[in-house]
Length: 73
Image (cartoon, rainbow, N blue to C red; front, side, top):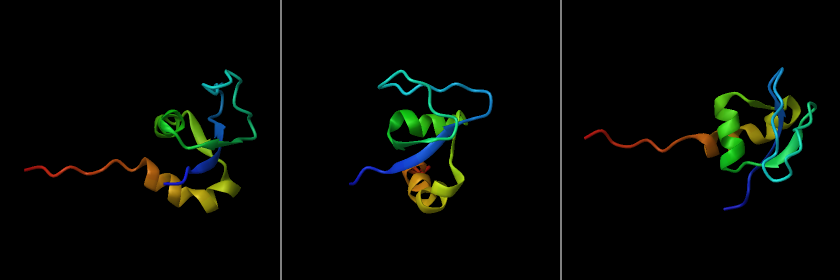
């Protein structure tokens, strides 16, 4: 499966650091591979998809974030 990349920016008032570089995420947004770390930041609301990139990557990002549904038997 190819890596999904998204452009994300920190939520207002937050400083979110890249775990690999320890550098703060740019307020205008940065292109990142949607891995476990960034998926969790999106779900927690710590980062947001950048509007112009969201139009092309949002369906892939939502599919990657969607948790599998277990059967309740």
